[in-house]
Length: 453
Image (cartoon, rainbow, N blue to C red; front, side, top):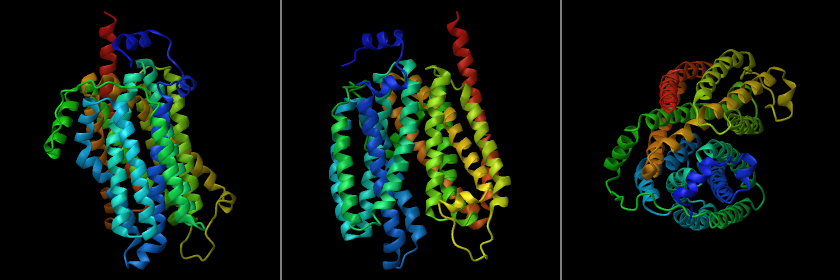
């Protein structure tokens, strides 16, 4: 177990880089555990969406779009309801031991997931999705609270860069595999075996995570989840640096949810392209986020600073404005009868290369924006309450995501705004994030000034 003296020694030593962390026992097992967990969640979610869209909606005389939206709501509901309990558990007990228990539960959940896919019962399918969301709710605070326990201050940025980049790639891999496998011959059986295999490997990886002792074993678990949720948010907000970094992170998830929702719409409605192009957009965006996160760590050289967060925010807004001007030029007349663009024919249209470039730049800018904010939140949080700080972040993230989804529905369905217009409005509203980042930069300057005396 890492003691306080060991931690101080770590801070005084030269910190490990990205490659060093990926070979370190302090980080690699946790990275693999969270990567496989995120991949499995999206493996099942995408398989469910494909099954609902192409089979179950018609069989049950239901709207496929509504069922898909319901899947997102079911997955995020546990974060709103149980994050307060998850955060307090992360502070009360050894985090590594709890992670192993949660990962073992994933194996059981995936067994039920296989049965749900076999019987194709909608209630059963969505119940499994709810439990996967519940598992993620309890895993999140443990994951982020473990990072500052095992990594020195100068390693936190690299650790978060790998976690953030790895998570987006895991989401991408899980979504692609889930979408492709479930539709293949013997797809349901292969999907079940695949999910169970990933869950077992994830549990085995979790057994190698080093112990992370409880920082606050006397904390009390409250069953009044709504009142306690407000309590932990208020406690997190009592730290000014944590408050503004937390709000900036939640803002990113709101904007990110809109962008991710627009990608398949751009492919299908604007470009008249098939699902392979939508997958291409997701892949490019996810890979760009990973590259941007690692680049940020290299530029900051382990320093926890938000100096690049402002730049990332501005670049995201500029990319969204660029889409406002480019999308009308790329729009294909829907009244024209023509075959949908595929992954190959997509590249025969010159303006599509410009679209890909804009999406890559936007994804790349996410790294400088979000990675330092997560590192700052973890570092600035009270060591005794890191778990509930992450839980407070998850609650606010969920509210922001739900709000952005409702806003997107209003803009698209009620106000009948075009995708280009939604991009422009999102770009303008996103600039408001600079208010929080500017406050963080002022606090950063004040801290540096005080440390010089």
